[in-house]
Image 1 (cartoon, helix red, strand yellow):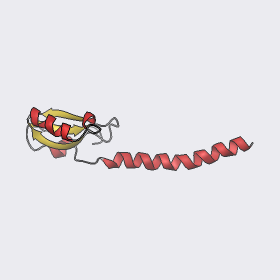
Image 2 (cartoon, rainbow, N blue to C red):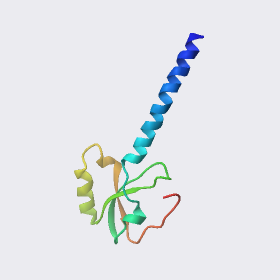
Image 3 (tube, helix red, strand yellow):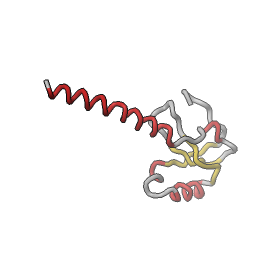
Image 4 (cartoon, rainbow, N blue to C red):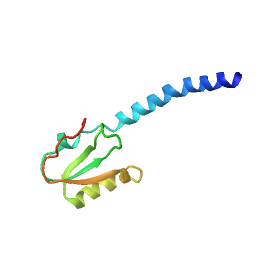
Length: 98
């Protein structure tokens, strides 16, 4: 019996912490989506998200491809691998919830 009560306490303590961490992670990188950020054709620096509802966030652009890669590398060794240079020759369409 004591083992069960320890398991319940742990679950009750961990669940709110996980929920808070998830909310912080989803809200931490809030930038405009591709549709809102588009100002003209070119390469845009984006961070894509696995959660489709969040959609990709744009952090710069329009650039030439070389300039986009320079801006991506400036973000540092931890962040730069998560960023993508995406070509938007026309205004992106809005898909899904974003």
